[in-house]
Image 1 (cartoon, rainbow, N blue to C red):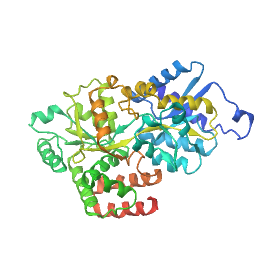
Image 2: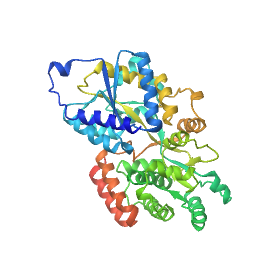
Image 3: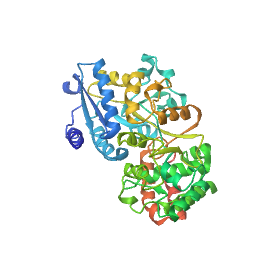
Image 4: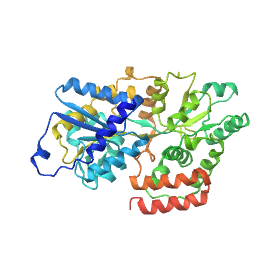
Length: 422
């Protein structure tokens, strides 16, 4: 696996030095290759991507895929490499990007992408995606990326063994959470595992706590700039987040997000809030649902689904445009999504996935996605722009240690005043 990561990183970094002059015959000529840029380098994500590559090769055996990957949780490192390439006039053929504001505000508004509405229309797929998803991937009436999956952010993973040992039930409300957390703390067990050596994991937790206090409408309004950060419910959410930090593992700042999820399955901590890629991690490590781990919506968020989606788009001046269209058509297809998602640990963004291919957790996620109120993830680029998210993460880096709610509110509001849609 280390070899795969290093090779992918080398491919991507070498590519940043290859600046092609626009308008030359080399830039216009297409080849039998297709470069796919992503941060899927390990575990279920890399294996899922490989399964989709295999399906592409089955349909187009003459096209060679260049798997350009850059390691780093939530794409932190990959986004920096991508920015160098895009701004230098050397885009990959297609690249992984979180659907929503991360793509639209960063690359669409600035004129770097082609609309891909025609891909869905030509394949007859437009009605195979929920309207809420089409809205998230669209700008000024055009679709700009093809979502290959749906992940859920607001999931609380818990240890059935630890809860059974103390005769406790998984918390449904924030009040429930603090009641069970006191029991675990009294017995020397971290109630909440957090792995925020990359600070986005703390932001990921915060978005669920905010939703628990505000509900979906006010949650959306907050990130649209129409609710102030000193709102009573938002303040209450920040107070509860600060209180939750009294129940976490001491090594949180040194721990990766999947290591924190592992603490739950190993019985080292009672609960963890992370996206449902954690289920893919549990399966890959041989942990059993119902014995080593199980799940509930994060406290206070039942009936709501915080969604994020990985997607691929079509950069302007992509070296192999025709091959990209083939790739995007596969990404939008039932065959492509059902090859990728069961291994990745996500559900299809289409409404007609083959449920027999998905495990018990993912079938439950499909049910909730079809029936819950859907709101976009902040931590994963669906709800807000990349510069705003960067500032949120900077604020969170301090807030998780100083726990100064008044200071955080002031700084969050300043960020909203600067970056929220006008």
